[in-house]
Length: 222
Length: 289
Image 1: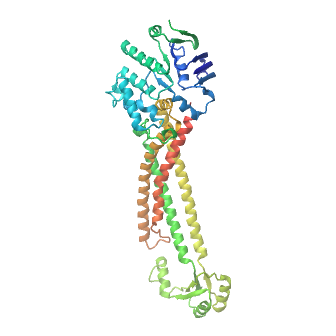
Image 2: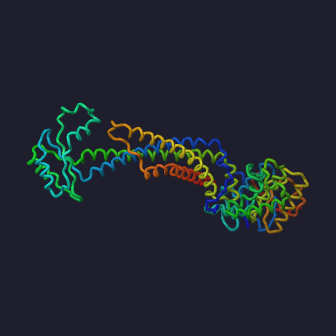
């Protein structure tokens, strides 16, 4: 369970970019996060993937108040979260398989096992022929699938995807959504930030809508 | 083990940073200075110890030039604390003086009569009482236990050791500062990759180890070169010094234990660099989430 209560976030001494945001994500739920550019989606996501702490309010993740956690405990919590960044954030000097294996490698997993697991995942996302390729040689859609494989290799409890359909055509967008649905059926809590309102409307999943830093709607999509 | 910071991860690819290679050059210069200072201190210390050992259990009795040494020799040989008392011949005394005064012009010099005294094993005679008895048997006799001269040289060796220790500490501090500066620059340069490692669950130690390993590689290469250069200088200096007959304190060749200690300089520099890089990363990462 992930619970935000009266959360506010400001950068430095600037104005609040998130104001009194409260919501709860049940385990195994699937939510879209929507809002215009500048509404605070990226800021809310940065709180979800623990890149930041709230300026006020409380964030409970998996039963723990993140603001009260010791710094040494954060890596353990982050390992339960997988993130697909909008700009992918792949390391260009590492091969595709090494990028995907990264979350397991930082945990000290057995090298042979993690490579096997990464290779299986890359086959699953349709990149079995590109294990040793470097990211700069891949298309946008392929990079995105590498990013997804990296996000899910640690079997996260929460998967966050920031504009996963922003850089791909409709066919690949549909395929990505099926991928997320499949992960969700396996019990992963999913949050997908998107501008694609058609995607939201066509889905049965609820929507968290941000306007000017405030959460204005938590509802089932039509 | 990666979770505890000892993993083999190299995601930051720090070895590709050409901007950080100046660390090796700086560490090479610092290791050169450190090895040279340590080598000279060891050489002086070795000389002092050798001379102290040579002079232990010996005395020199000095009589005015032309004095009869027989009464003094008889008194000394009768003393139970004395194992042997031997007069140093005029020729031997001239040979000792010739390096300083030149050969061939000592014949007319009033050289004192010298008696070399070897003390019995474990004997510790009362030098004041022995001097008084000698004075009575041979007027103007003087005892030299070499303590005053040797004491000065030992003080010099101790001072050299202290200076070497200060140089080593200063060099270590300078090396650590350089590595810390370069590490902070590296952290800024690789900020995005560092953030990514954090977000996928890497502990600070996992990241710090990568910087420490990169610093170790550069420091070891630099310090190895610097120490090797200093070793060549020490060997050359020792060779020149031992071939010169006019040096008051010829530098002895360094012993194997001295060379072993000098060989530790690159390893010590490597450890200092690794510790500085690791500490810098841990301190800096602690300031961000």
